[in-house]
Amino acid sequence: MSSDLLLALIMFAFVASITPGPNNMMLLASGVNYGFRRTIPHMLGIGFGFAFMLLMIGLGIGQLFIQFPMAYTVLKFASAAYMLWLAWQIATAGPMTATEGKPDAKPMTFIEAAAFQWVNPKAWTMCLTAVSAYTVPSQYLASMFILTLVFTVVNLPSVSVWTVFGVSLRGLLADRRRVRVFNVCMAVLLVASLWPIVAEHMRFAP
Image 1 (spheres, rainbow, N blue to C red):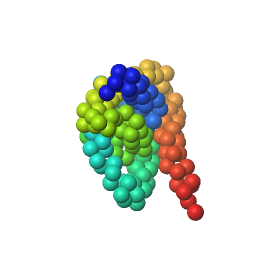
Image 2: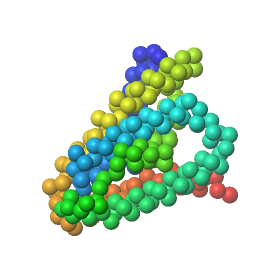
Image 3: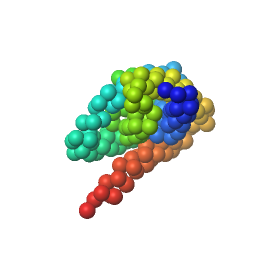
Image 4: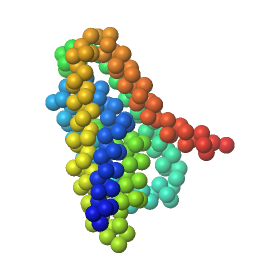
């Protein structure tokens, strides 16, 4: 992989990782509701889950959806349903003072965050774009390894910014009513991130 292509890949990985999306919206809400330390497994799960997903798609799983487009359609709508459920969980989460005292109130775990990447529309877009744009056919396996390594290194610091931002808002949102409004806004933004799926379906609908 040339230095120019590597630099372009690093820039793409940074922009794709730090811009708003389902992962970052949930990390922002988790930072507000649970704090930085309790959100660490969530952040690590995103990094590991996305890297694994990227590698699997690069090694051939992406071809499955080319051969069986209906499977991709089913996955997209299953993803949408799951994200609507997550949005509801965020919207109905209690304020910080309540969640910190409840044993059943917990942020997303490492496994849950890693698994979530497979139903995250932005993650699929990032993976398919990265594999198609930043791999070198003559050095495919080596470039896939570099691709996965770059995203692994860049992703965690990028998504951590959103958790830190959420933590910085805790004082402002200590009021029960304010944190309720914040959680509802985060849920609405998470639902809004489903627009690409809706728009694509409307474009191809008869």
